[in-house]
Length: 145
Image (tube, rainbow, N blue to C red; front, top):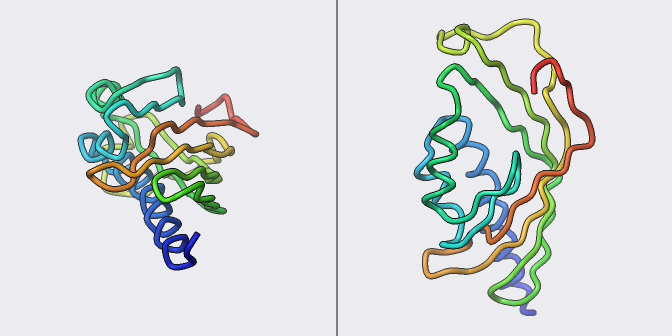
């Protein structure tokens, strides 16, 4: 593969992963769902397929949920010019309760979970999208997950 194309695919897919975290944490659920291909699959707490179903599932998240998906170690492996795989490490911080609606920091928190996303990515007419994103947990704090 041409090195410039390889780099372009990696950057586009890294941006896709970061957009996932930002859109989810800022409750931009339509933009979040658009990060998936038309038949894209999100496998986090169950399995949801398709943009409309993903958007609907996200809208069921409680309004009193504040989260921050901290992503690191993003490794994209282009397969060819329209397909790639990826791994993204996740440290998840979240709080559910009335304090989440206030404009001040929540004190006394610990990570809810640490794990990684395993991704299958595809080039669509709308750009790079998730064909399949699955969460694998290594650590889970049952008190706030």
